[in-house]
Length: 383
Image 1 (cartoon, one colour):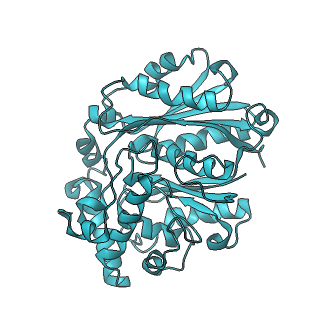
Image 2: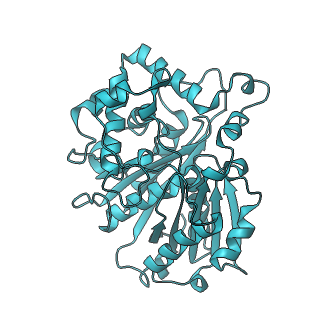
């Protein structure tokens, strides 16, 4: 059993389709400065730094950590850089968590970012697959996502409307998020009537492409009180995977997410997710994935995600609000999204969320992941 680890400072940029006002290094500095200020610390107080980004082609800079270290004043620090596709930020946070929990660091800074306006996103995604089994069929992530959703519709009777309700909910929530890229309310009918992209996925089922960065400061229990009287304690965190193109893969549940959630719930003492969580932040690359996460995380029984959505339980005034921040529908700087979800959940339990503070929120669930649905993780945070 490692040491207790808490989030003591957070910071994120104002996300946009193109942040032409700053370089990639400047974007990172913006988030880092805010996180350090929030934690009442300077870079001198940080022992180790984790830099997380999407694949190199996402932002077209090789070994960006070298540039970033100079920009944030981290010379002489222990630095780790990693990538894990859409889950890069979450994987970076997990690496930072292990450093503090294992006693190698008292305070670790984790910064994640992507400046997608400067890279080759679609080309990069289309070359991620196994060159023998998968690349011949690759049309980006959207083709797989459409097939996944279609399979659930056939078996569970889900309709396009269920996913459209997710898109409408999250886009409405994003309006109050001061950092969101897209702030426009849409109706369920607007989503259903939007341009078809890869049926049944339509334009408004898809999040934007954003430039942005996010940073958190992780601390041991010994040092946390120097920054805040109410850290967001990480009670459990896991990131699991499955084979990329396994023919036996289930499209009903995300198996790696189900495995990760069981591990995390055991560590955090969660026995009834629907009743024990006050707020949930998930990374929905397309609206239909949020429905899958409801089931894979145990928020409802398998096959009942559409009913949970229709019941209003995941709305802001429901008993288990999901994505009060607007999720990826508000902003989607891919490499940073996992850290953004942690920030939104952490500020909820710390009582200082800038979007929609959920009253008396004490325990939060975070989900993130990358790859072609084969990398999934989750974390439990509490005040």
